[in-house]
Image (cartoon, rainbow, N blue to C red):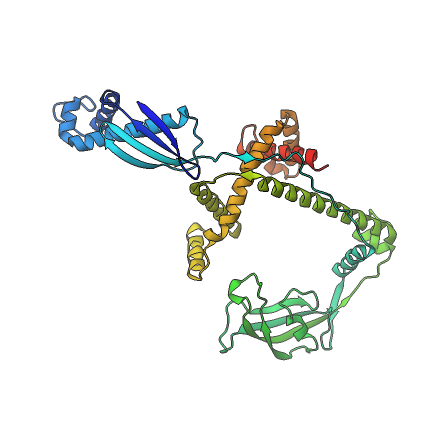
Length: 425
């Protein structure tokens, strides 16, 4: 059997395979064996008819096609394994001669990585500061969360909690789906509604009705309302004024679960928590910047098939996050295309970035020779198990068994931590 590998553009290879008549013999025997089990031939037991009779029964073309198919499946796999090709998609097969079999298979492979020297990459850290204003904002938030509300017989004011009925209409007076609600709670001034909506309610009395002319923000989560003019009919059903607790030592002890006995101690606790959060945010920023530098230092030709597979995975994750069925998600994608938006095209850049980063990091970790001792990985798994309820621990432990995908992913995360530790001191 002749096998020839030719490198193509965009990280593809062409595999040329040619078999002789003698090499086809074993596939003829195998084809005869498989066909004879499905085709009854008078005078012979199942599977015992000679090749010549089977050929005559099904015809030379069908018989040779069956043998060629068996040969193709086996020889393609052999070519991949023998030449250590890391393929990333199904091949495109071109049959040059069916019998004896001669074909070419074009297939995408993992691209070669050209990674420039990254040893001098440095990401400067920024000073982490927590101001008195930061602390005061959290303290104010704690007070507001502990507030109590009581009915008020007056026009509503900023800070009040109101219950309203509202319904949205377009400029022609047509009701708009998704713009109405009954007994909807709103704390005026918290900014939970679109800009101007809460301000438009201030001054209304209980049972009063009002129409507000509003414009949705250009960057709104529901695309169909972005920048849209809408008129809202609003009725105030209830007005409650907010009673804020006094920020004293008793309050500090209560909201801290007994950890802080005084207001001063609570402020110190809040400050420490804010510092920890900001330090974590700064660590994430530096890690992200380091990874961006790695991407910038990487050159590779990503095959189209690899990008398409990555986009498929990204879309499937989005579908699962949205909690909708495949057919419904397909309709959503189609609807987006009809609006002139192609989700696949929009994700192309991100897909290439993720592939580049994944392959580059694999190369970096290989160069760094970072290894995670088995004991360290198992210790990490044990720590992870403690975060789950007892009834789920056996299931999670099984999922993180040595050699499992979850275990390998955990190892990769630990290796990445070691890499950051070395370069982000």
